[in-house]
Length: 279
Image 1: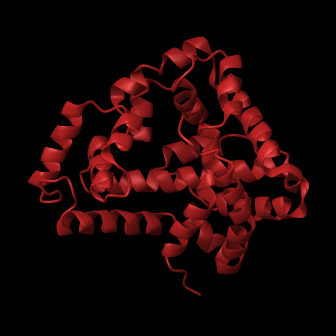
Image 2 (image 1 turned 120 degrees about the horizontal axis):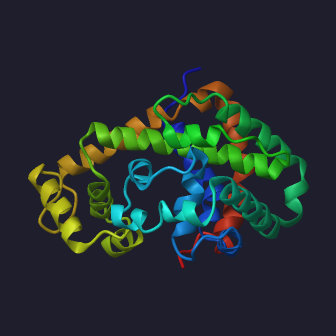
């Protein structure tokens, strides 16, 4: 049975909250402070890049892609002077444990978590590391023993695998980090102010990126995508799906559908509990 690449996008949309809460919950901020990191964005950049080791800011800029380089350089490598990758990773896993226990309650010890962890691990272990630096760094980490933590780790691996492929598709199209955000804003899905401020791009950089995209015929004078711009974005999303199919081809449609069914209520609980809210 040939699987449709759109399955990859469906899996990502369902499981993304089960990974993404770690960037917003209070447990993370507290754990990173205890690990010696400064408050603010340092915990995000240090914890997500820590699987690659104490890398310089340039590596984080390359792999995180759409953040202003000045924002990254304000956190890395200072994070490695204040703490260490091993200490930060220990803090992150403790925060994941605490947050999931709080959000999921008694469900955390149920057989459904065990089953979901097994399927997600099989999918993650089918992924290849070549050309996927953030995935490769996370794949080098040991698997947690507890099922809920193994599930979170597997979902994280699958998320970073897709993300690395997404960046590759944008690079293939000659799109830079700020340009990617301008294109996203051009869809009308998320306002410019949110995307620009969360990634800390100055107005002059944003305006230059918009001018460059208008020069390619992808953006109109009001900042909305043209037909050509929408075609570009559609190609990137479709290519990302194709590049993300290896884990789902490995486990098959039925097990992928079962994993979505199992994770959906937990992702819903994470969203409804406010664990993905920007602060």
